[in-house]
Image (tube, rainbow, N blue to C red):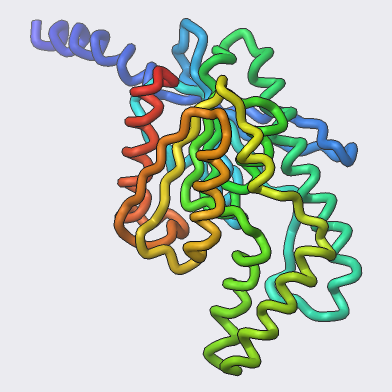
Length: 283
């Protein structure tokens, strides 16, 4: 009798355990340059109805690994990919002529790749196209803004995102150079940031943000003590979003810029994002 009770208990628990399992697949995606990019997909093993989908763009170094940081008991399909460019750890002047066209191509491929992924997910029989959310974290946020405008993705979450790219690039240089070289470092940061912005022909994040329409919903999450994104960069993105026709929510959280997978920084961002998606009927 005791053995039989254990078997019954095991039978009751098995469906719950199986439902929590995820199936991982790879979707080959054709990029604007003609290259193929492997997209990582995670979906519930036992899904029986159309799923909401979340496209996750982590920071540059994390790429498709950002999917492993998303923890939810809701049945969702997760999608992500590694950025189609490998930047050198140390930038040497002689590398710049070769790196510029590669970086321009990678920016176009990433932007076009997200739009192509949205189209692929919208066509899938197991995905609800009305409940696709694009999440851009840190360096992924500008790409998310561009792609949301290009593809009219229904919902977008921008975590520690920014616009005014020349100002943000200048800030990155100045963080390193001003301490060493004082005012000369600051002036060099200003000059190099504008030069790099022009050479890369970077698109306007503000213009894309302003073009979002009334069918789209946006959550912007800011960090109160963000040391990576200057306040002017965050302000520029928020202002451009508010000038659009999209429904925009802005949340400012205490703490600094999200980096890696530090649980103390990741948890409040993840909780706020999931709460917003649930409130908006996206999951």
